[in-house]
Image (cartoon, helix red, strand yellow):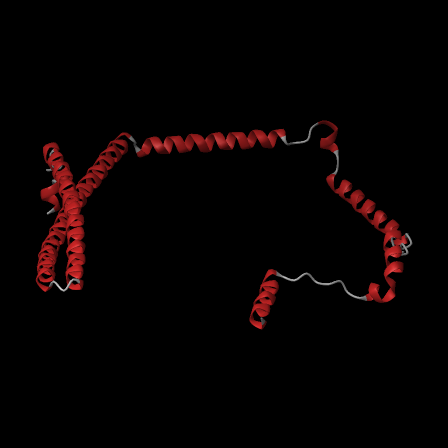
Length: 235
């Protein structure tokens, strides 16, 4: 089925769906959409007529006009049959339009995939594995050269090259030990607690009992909402 629609990619044949066929498909979808809109408008008209005949039947019944009420109900039944047929037509048109739209989408998707595959094939034809290896070898060689240059620039020169690193590390350890001894020999600070003058004055005004009482904890939104609910139930 797909070979009939899109052709056989192995032998290089293109899609069997021509430009003329695509144009006809678009025209058919547009025609179906216009017909669907027309039927929907007709459906609205029938709905109004059914409601009108039902109201007329009610009026005739209230007026004790049995014959007129039966006539209105007959018209209502006729309009309902027309409406049922119309709904079936709308359903068929919608299915046909959906099928054509899906087919068009499939054709466009396959055509895009075919274009991508063709472009990828051209790129791979122009790209050779030997050229890739040469590029990678050149990059690795440049990286090694740069690393060698950085190592050479990082070597100490002049007086710094004659310094003994082990001797410097030993001197550093002696300095750290001396600093630690000085810290241990210093007396520990005595903690002092001072009450701010503003806090002391406040404590003197409110008294010891109030000062010892813990501060009220702010209520959450859930607690406030629960209190309001309880107040409404108690009322």
